[in-house]
Length: 616
Ligand SMILES: Nc1nc2c(ncn2[C@@H]2O[C@H](COP(=O)(O)OP(=O)(O)OP(=O)(O)O)[C@@H](O)[C@H]2O)c(=O)[nH]1
Ligand SMILES: [Mg+2]
Image 1 (cartoon, rainbow, N blue to C red):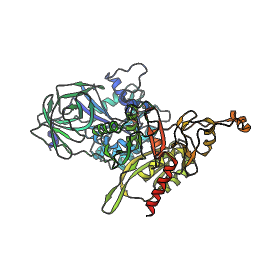
Image 2 (cartoon, rainbow, N blue to C red):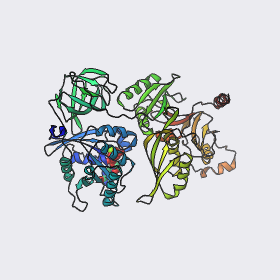
Image 3 (cartoon, helix red, strand yellow):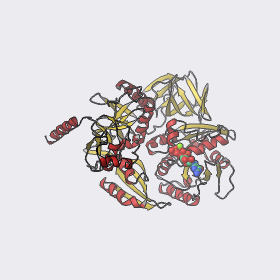
Image 4 (cartoon, rainbow, N blue to C red):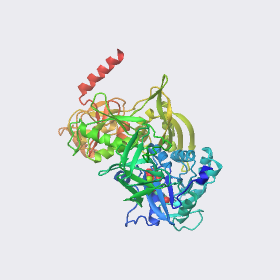
């Protein structure tokens, strides 16, 4: 067989680490880097792989990263992947770059929706995962049960006998040890390292064949421009060599290698040459894109195609038109600034698409989900951009005469007391209940299939409904026939009628109508949304009203003013909350909600026009 004749690089192992969100991927890689001396932790320093400030703040991995270390005379390339479902297609691409995967499963939680998704993708690519039951230091860890559940998941996903014969390593990435039997004494990570070394195949690498590399990720360097990151499948490449890119659509672009970087620990070092089996970063082809093949000009043959998921939701980004525009220290305020920044993003962020809107006022930005787009918004605001964004819309498709919409697989975990209201809300949104079970901690787990469109507004309501305790995981399932009308937001909003600084006394009077988003002293403007109105209609309110000093009763109750702390707006909440006639204003210092039309007269006029147009 041809496979038997393939040459392999015995000095390399390429591995990806995959799991559900938060099951400890990044922490485990940190432990490996520490033990192998690839990185020396300074005192008090914890995770280093989540190096981006947004990642550190949120405690999640957003960008896949490669790190490498040497153990037992072997170079290990280990690729950390994000656990959040919005980045699922990225994980899929990374799996094509490696020869083995570590599937991490939390020793307490057990397999979760994203565990299933990433395992399914690995099995489809004929990879043989190594299972790591992680966080065994947790007091309520139940490693044996979780190992059994993981085995069941492999069976459910039709793993082959060979794949079912997976090794299991028990680990605590946090404490830095791994064992082959949960009862064994703990030492360090050596048992895991030797299982990877033994069970992951060395990469197929024929250095005599013409150069071919698959572009899996992109990076950007101010000096050399776009950098293509990926694995070299065949041959070798040197700086100054001519190369050709075969794009996904088949067009060719020539370039010359201006820089080659390989990984040593977390840093990248320049090399003159790179050979098959290695994972490297290459500059020199201006229009390089993810999924393309880089090849020797005399053999422009593409490697097998990788899948790139299409965006499922979009929103409009425009320049900030609120009366407070430019007052919060924003440095980039104009449409032109926003256009340039978005076009740059579309170049390196796979799955982001940018188009000008028909009215020329803004940009339609499409992405893989709410987190994907809200991270872009958060990144831009930190860089000094101000903008206003609209409610996310799903992207429909047509098949023959049918209108199709994206549908998600959702897992909801709530305290049993919220099960009733949550089930009712799912029912109203035409969700299809797949399964209801009790988790190990006594929470109710509801599995449902529900339209993405119904979920957008639901997330904010779900959080309010469960007082912030509910957990919801969603994962794109497929496009299905349009599900018809969905219920909108249940609450109305309170809209400020004037501009100034909010007064405590006024807010005290307004807070019983619904949850507020501002506190005394916050600047408000006419048309700004200052809170929810539990009655389902919009209410124009006076946030500047001070107590009348002559009113003895009010004066007497002054000390008794008790203001409930307002909801701190996050970008995710704001996007999930607003309606089509509303916008989120984003500045480096604030997130505000507003009506699209700020004056009440204009809103009424627009509403009348819309009704007239509708009845015509
Ligand atoms: N008890 C315990 N906690 C752990 C262990 N490993 C990680 N954690 C904690 O679990 C949380 C998530 O850890 P991460 O390493 O960021 O998990 P991740 O899988 O990389 O998460 P995403 O990249 O967001 O999918 C953090 O609070 C860690 O401190 C472990 O071995 N034991
Ligand atoms: Mg991580």
